[in-house]
Image (cartoon, rainbow, N blue to C red; front, side, top):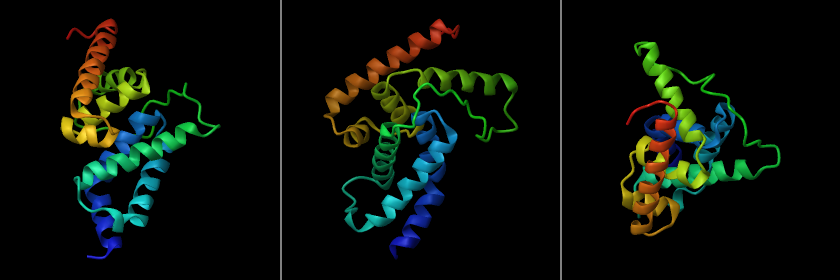
Length: 166
């Protein structure tokens, strides 16, 4: 299958997950859209170098994180932004309490340091295994397990301080 068709398939299959991860990483929906678009552009350009040493999801996640990091390095990016899901679609069937709780969890994750936020997003939102997370962040599996556990404890503490009994 030609690379263009493969990328179209990947966009259909992973597009929402990549956009959600970019949003959680960057805290800004429009920047997340840019990062997600750049992710698939880079995937198309470098598709021939993808030798399936990892899964497509892991490969795209690594590209997306690098795109997010590049955007964060740009001078005009302000880390203090808090545009909370103003343009994100919410499921109409969810009760208001669930939407508010999800927003609170999103805020808690966004308040974390970048390396903690990164592993939380990969673990909970991308549902990657510890081995896959290790591949994405370029660390050993043991160090990755430690980082994920540490980040989970920090997230639990933030949520408890916000009034969520865990």
